Length: 272
Image (tube, rainbow, N blue to C red):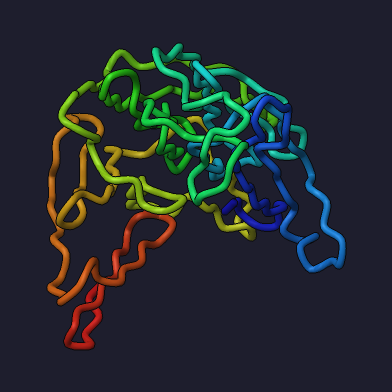
């Protein structure tokens, strides 16, 4: 998580559950506890044959959004990281189960037998991100039969910082030509903000909640570089191509606020 100090910071770990069993698939830890000899999660979620396919922390409160893909359905939740009290934003029934075989001796990836074997079924939501002031949640996912969607939810929070309500935008994009952008590690969408979202603690000012300043833009990775997309017009405004390297993708880093991209090339030069 990346909450304004002095709030607690959290780390979330998502995984896949065991076959035909209820198992912990999401564990949330307090970062301050990680230096202890015995570390126990602050909260955890159990599911039957489920897998976490995407997650993202809110920016101004201890909340987390995550998607759980179960046998024939995926569900998108927002939860308090400390209690994992769930609010469901979306539930989608899939045509094909994500588990390929239910046989006891079915081969598993890696040569083992038994356990969960993933099929080629659509995983559901694979990328999530909150806007800087948490007034918007955006998601990319693969639905049935190669159908990809880019969706957004408008979020409302009360004065105490608790999640209040949501509404799904009608501006949902759909395509069967592959994903809109590539999934990249644990984070695939960076909102680009022209203003700092943190107020100066000495000034006594509070960060306004439920309101994003100006035009919202996101930075996403595409096949040959990065794309800056205006969410208001839903159009690409800029394209930043990868620097030339002999093999693979160049090393890069992106700041949390999406304002800075750093990339290196084979000549030993780093560009910002």
